[in-house]
Length: 167
Image (tube, rainbow, N blue to C red; front, side, top):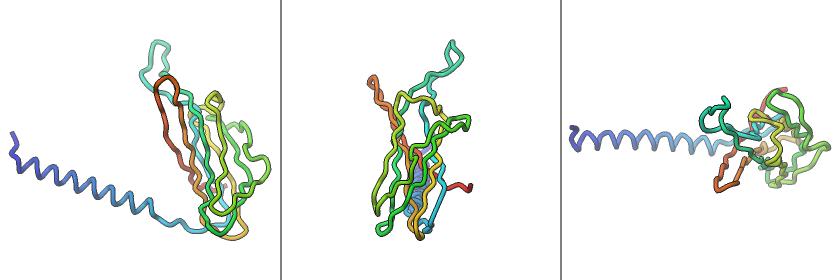
């Protein structure tokens, strides 16, 4: 059996590792992103998620998810223009364009897109490709999707965040 001193030592090391991870995450979250005048963003979307065990049917259970896509202009002085927001399914097939004509998002404004709960056409590997630009370099937008299903006494809620990609 280990003595109290050993457990105290293990606890202190564990706490130091946790605090180190928390500090590195906090510094990453506060990172200032360089200003840019245009980007193409990839945003993962889940129109359903698999869970549980593989049953007699040979496939796991699935839960449908809605997705609220939020395009937030983080620049306090300048507008940005969303040129398009194309929605692709798991196989990479274009399903539709949620922004068929360019829209302007004012400083600190937000534009939202919504994929309904009953729209499972995208699959678990769906995505949006969002193209935006501005007249001059600005703070890049924050683009996230909030996925949710709150049916039948259960709640599934999580977010995904976009990443810039080259064309």
